[in-house]
Image (cartoon, rainbow, N blue to C red; front, side, top):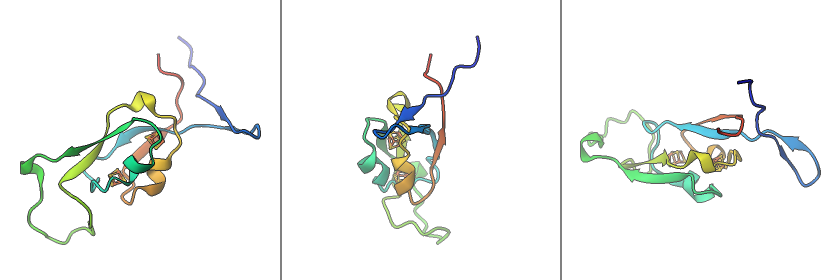
Length: 105
Ligand code: SF4
Ligand code: SF4
């Protein structure tokens, strides 16, 4: 099978743009602040509680987390992503990885 072309969008003014789809979310870096969830226009993300065993109870000051570190965001519905990158614009921990992609088979 040949390589499919990446999905291309177009603005109202007629300018082409390449959507950058969210393909990964580093759950280890995520502080569970929920900023990405609030701005995502699609049903792509779900917040999950960390298992009690995973919660870091000793405050060893190795980070500057100020949010709910006992939960993290997950990419639960990546096929619904439109590649707008709003999630990365607001994420304070650079958790997301984006890629231009063809339509999924
Ligand atoms: S790129 Fe846009 S649609 Fe995709 S997860 Fe991020 S905010 Fe949601
Ligand atoms: S904005 Fe970043 S740190 Fe906050 S919940 Fe989303 S992925 Fe996690």
